[in-house]
Image 1: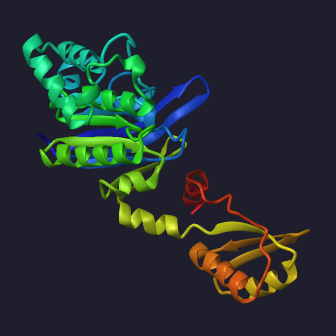
Image 2: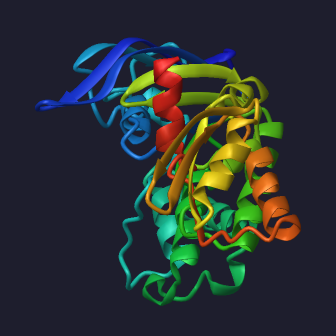
Image 3: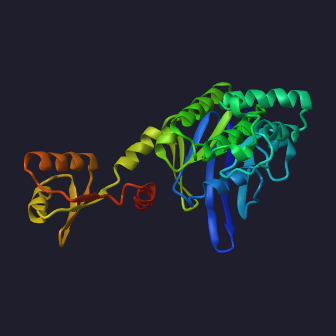
Length: 307
């Protein structure tokens, strides 16, 4: 298998006036790659372009060197878990996985064996013969992943695979992704949570508003994100004293006072939180509330765009 799995050049896809993917050029190789971005970043649209479910409005995308649209040869090499599940609730999980495998042209006997193995790998063997209608959201997610891995495809595409999973189930999926990659197959999965990607790979693609912000080692990306100045709003009756304290700190970029609130922009939020803790314990300063609107991926990406 070629080291280049997905390649796009000047790729764009729009829906009316909405540009979902904007002039995107990237190369994704073997191993595990995480697509990271806030909701609306274009992750799902990019994956559907890779699957040939959408055609490019402009530019090109290649999977294993070929366009995926209506290309059965390419699509046969891909396993896919969509962001939202679509089941016949009267079917059992096993029946659904077996049915999906049969759609690939596998005979009944082998399809049943592959479905059993996939259910075992995702930890749902004990419930696989129950109707899907009786499953929790996490169980439905595991079945969706099971049908994606049942056929040992060269490329596994998982769209928000951790959504709806409890911590134990997440650990199962983390280990499963690693195991699949160790077998030589490529895995591309999307998430809006940095931690989920950090658990399984160092390769990350950052998307925002349909465009590529950065691509590479997640440790380097983490350094970029950690440079993001955080804005913290603190409610306290001691605004003047607290403002004077933070004004003397080298990590403070800006201070704003309004009524009983002080808003501090800091280059080191961890240090700021520790200082607030010390002020409360040592100086008996009253802190009524702390709010950090910048503690979300959207604000981090907006900062990276403006760098």
